Length: 534
View 1 (cartoon, helix red, strand yellow):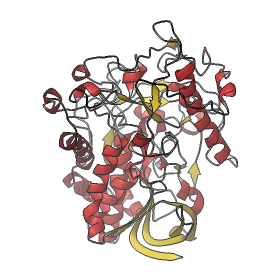
View 2 (cartoon, one colour; view 1 turned 90 degrees about the vertical axis):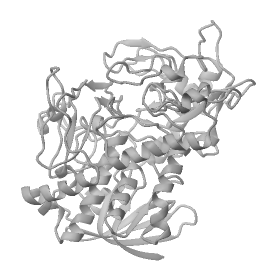
View 3 (cartoon, one colour; view 1 turned 120 degrees about the vertical axis):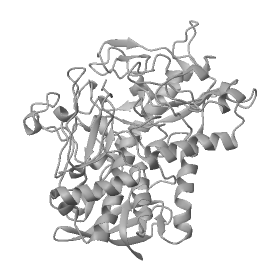
View 4 (cartoon, rainbow, N blue to C red; view 1 turned 180 degrees about the vertical axis):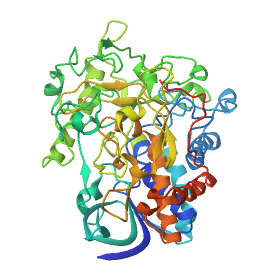
């Protein structure tokens, strides 16, 4: 067994974990950062999902470090790709010209930028990255976490890390379960927080869908995969509320729940330079191909790419038949989710109706080189929901919803950042259809990073103090990054000042002192007055 010690241990190398490590490192602390998969970056890399962001992201509403990540991704394309002159001159370059985000990119671009951001700290010995490794046990002393033990996935060896502060940044809240930190999972009862969209009774097994994403292009030739083992099951599966088989172009509209048939056309020859992604104006999913497109070939010199590349994270691959977190058969359920994704691809290649009246696109080709895997699926599941700490502050639906155009979200005296996304819950294992509620631009309270009891563990990413409902708007890339950045800064601040997180949060003056540090580092604590929700 290898034994390590650092003032700060960050468990999970997704966007929240990377941000936490950077904030702590830049504050002068030594950090151990761990990650289960081969790529750091979580949602934007191993899960393959390009940035989901609010429409003002190019002007304000994100942290300076997150902006550096975005700028780095754009610069990566300018430095290494044969962009056309027009694309190179596009200040807000969107390499994929996808409609879901103003910056749709390939996973490897974000991997490269993140590795470059961390490289100097590794070189000077201030950061140790343990990867690939999964947390498998932990020790505690009363209300403190004393160590976490990891099993390396390459050689099964053990690594135990002791630390003064532990930041929970895993995708599903693994450290909460290992340390006995009190947490919520699934849907809370309506009576607990008086949330209009919550069920009458608590439903701990009611979790948002998990998706196994994959990348595709469309080229000449026959690229049909072998028929998946569960294809017949998934081809015949029709959820009660779906209005059609799951494997079809038809599904509920998330905002209206009306049964809607979407369009699909690979390489449509659209004007990539004219794409202006803005979720407040249009969801952007009219043509699924361009919705999450991560490389638009027309932005590059003629002949550079034979096809666009699109990222399949669409309704048809949402797995919501069984819960996975805390389930005894989790591995089986994840295999079923992978089978669903492969079955959808096979259906698209062989049976999907085409606009010209034919069926199937045999030229659809999996791109394992894009996802970094042998099977062409993303390395990691796209988790929309995790175990969530029982926090000092819990953000609830009525804190952020927008019932009227001039509604404002709750103001927090202990704000540690801002975010904006609609309350967007995908179909869930409890049988719920989409839950999609307009939201107002909101703040992130310091208290939702802090467990009620445990004194040296801080939450980040999807493990913060939200509910099943509000997780739907706090779960996206910029907010996940902001939570991690604030958690890393808070741990470093407490070590430097000899304070605890609970002491900082409980005191107006100590909170203001910490907020001053955040502002100096480029964290925005409030929204401009003119911004409204959608």
